[in-house]
Length: 288
Image 1 (tube, rainbow, N blue to C red):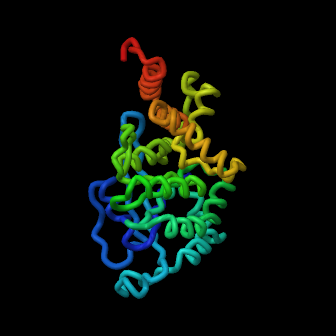
Image 2: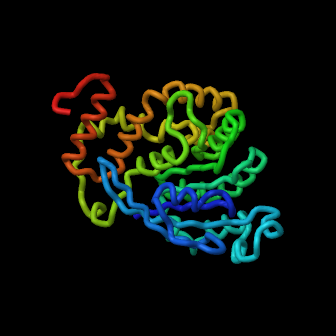
Image 3: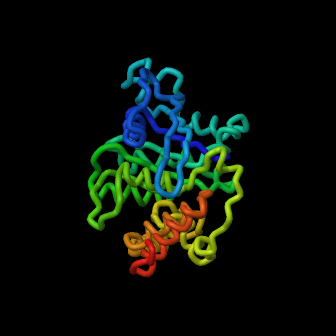
């Protein structure tokens, strides 16, 4: 069962800060953050689940010289890390992952980001080859200018990642840790008990048209332009079209993904269906 989140990035890229924001507190850590294991309790009005969180680290050029020995002990380069994670020995680990959160250091630009995503391509390819229905997220620590954010978003888009930063959206979109939480929760995690249940499909929530629209997420960065065989010009046009509708429909499609990927009770499905109907028609739903 895919019920784990992998958080991976170089030292100093905000992994523990992110965990504290999501979970409220984490166990004290000294030295390398590689091997940290936590449990993330997701609870919203649609479902509740406890999700395992794994933290891993890799070294970038210059880290050995700049960081303390205890901080780099046991860590490998990103190329070595990716090779190990793609091995047959790591298949059981890969098969349990439903979300990958790649953390990017503050101040990193395209020249820093793209080589790292390039080295992660083999892992992304293996996840995709296993009929993966998870999410690839890239979270950058600290402030970033709107211009740089747009460049980083474009690179993440090309490699299949959704880029998340802490800029305040002029369109009112959710950003930062709030968006990260949304992107994780929309995957519709299952507990061990829920996995044993056989959910009864709700006709309202299994409409082929609506579900086709809800997968993949309408966040432009979650599409892999290369898998669609698009030229750079067509890719830019697609992103523009997606972003035009993003503000109005993202929340609806996120809820559809929760419905599709979760084992909801009848009461929860009814409440979600009413929410969706109200947003789709822009009116009041009787009894809601």
